Image (tube, helix red, strand yellow):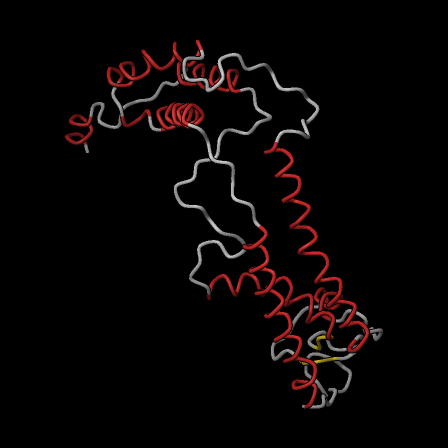
Length: 251
């Protein structure tokens, strides 16, 4: 009798590990690796920014960093830096396109950045959905209601629906795991485990070094810079070295 259930322990065939448990593990590892390689092959390189766009993005980020790290500067140093950049950001001196018009709320399908983002999203959905659907149908067809293993540690009944899919018994010990549940566990957990074992910083894609993407096409850059200039002008903070001597002597 099991100590965690009133039902007798099931005697699992050791051959299940060879013919069900390990094959599912090997197939899921191979599928995850193949999906990763296909994602790298099918991933399109980002559209790099031109020189005016790079300058526009650089000044926008500079204003953000200046606002977020204002506590490292004295009032005189901060005003010296913001005295020039705030009026120029409001005048649009750093805009890549000074004649830019507000974007339409309806997305422009002819914009290469918008269409590329939409195609990339559809490609990733297909790459994730099709292999998982095929393998899930294969597991359901061959090992649909097979119990593949018993966990060596106790669990609460809340795990029953997750670990015993396609198993119709209500009084079975929750530690028994069905084949389809083993498939779902591998689907969720394998990418993270392979990421830890991999030396790549990005497992499902490649990272282009030195490439700078422009600001999104759906944003109104002039308004974006004006808002950042207003936020920078309203920024007030105490310098970390203000009254440092008094605080040190009074400590």
